Length: 208
Picture (tube, rainbow, N blue to C red):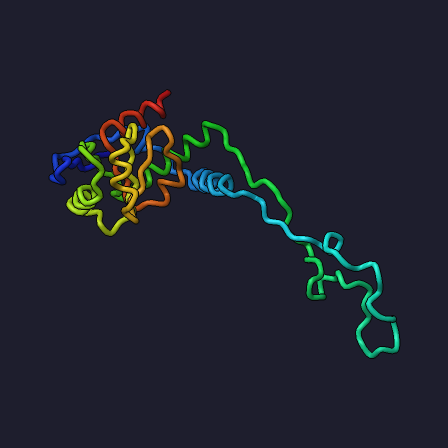
């Protein structure tokens, strides 16, 4: 499988052969789902909490006598039916953290890369050399490549601070390093942009 290659000026410079172990792997949808679920769950703080009827202040005395008032029976003002009462089955602080073994995570990552490549959503771009951070330069490069209206994930070998600052104000562009690339980021973009260094280090990561 091949991907188009572009220069820093946005001109097409032929194509690049993509590594088979990365872009011709088995697409296991269940593993990809598990990897995405794990990532999103691990981002949750799990601090949501509310008080039940045992935790709220009040209660201890029957609000009014059982019979003869014409009102409904009531045993405590901490009942979930009362304003200011406790919450029935309230949320409690908990951990949403889940784990996958390294082999399964890598299979999910390679499957996501393969799915993205089959959709034609992988391009290789020469790493831009910037004297200073310039959002306009990066925006023009993305437009020349034809990715202006797409969600772009730009993967570097090592992110240059100037390149990072040049893309962080672009709403549809995200940057990542090949060593920290994960399945959710791949599934949450329309196009994967790789530098040659990023592609090489990504292949080394899989073959390690």
